[in-house]
Image (cartoon, rainbow, N blue to C red; front, side, top):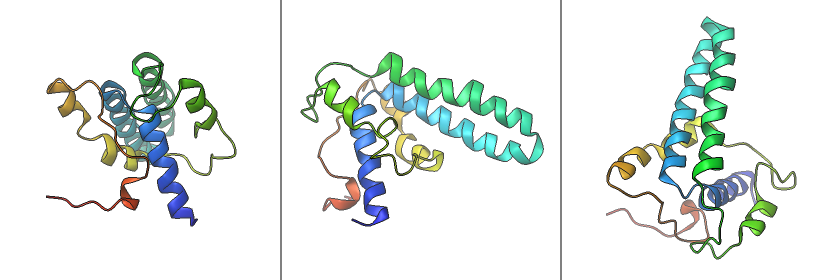
Length: 139
């Protein structure tokens, strides 16, 4: 498996196991945009950049997981919460090759607030493989 394939698999597992809630996805979008703003602020005012990262972006991101992700049996992935905790990218050093970056989060969760406004509280996650490895067609 190449590095890029491993990255795609880890990102897909992270999304399908830990980002069912559209509220959590929307909070990840806010967090990602805040991180991107902080990256720019590093060159203008490093203190503001640090404050944005640690006091806005990180708590926003973690609150989504803590308060809005379902903790019961995951029907979409046929996995228990305990299994998902065992394979979690962020806490499992064996699988932790890279961290998800804010650019990826903006692309992945950019439409989540729109889905929420339409009343879709949870992402209908399907498939066990990263989207790039599945044969898909865009209509």
